[in-house]
Length: 113
Length: 115
Image (cartoon, rainbow over all chains, first blue to last red; front, side):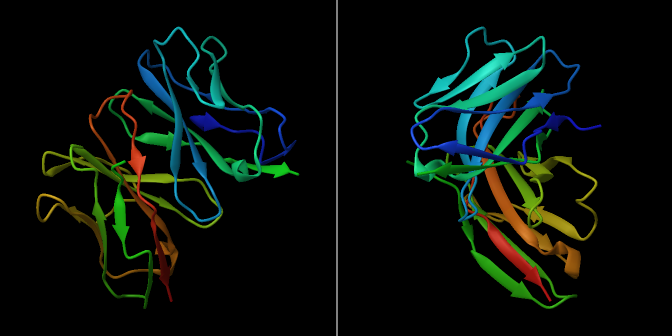
């Protein structure tokens, strides 16, 4: 069974608009962490934002925020004021306890000028 | 800002040859990882390493693979007798701690092509 599901293979957004990238996860653990990474065309994996399962507030990092809905097991990434440089693959990932990190299939975001 | 580094950035090898991929984790990090990403696919966990031993490995990490921390700074992934299907991007990552809340920082990757 898939642990992390990203249902949007590709998304388009107009420059300066906000965009939401979806991520749902499956776990029976109480303690887990959710992460988003950006992978530009150059290939590196850039950490964006983290949300802990016990965090009551949604995580924010600059233009990135995480819409964490624990009961629905979703952790959507919101990018505000999109920039051309935001065009990349975005991966949602989860770590349960001390176990290995599992990644979703990714969403390719294209920002249109 | 400290970062994970990896060498080489690209490696081309013949099927059946051995390759060693090198990583220098962030200096105060204690947990190290290798992942791979076959072109166009998701990132897959290979192995985690802590206190000079493997703490977890996936089903992908079979006897063909080994990891080592030969000195205080390097962390290596060795692939013995490479196969065509080993062609992928290999990422090293490190984290300060090993729990669910610990962010793993990734290196730029080594793109391996097996011919």
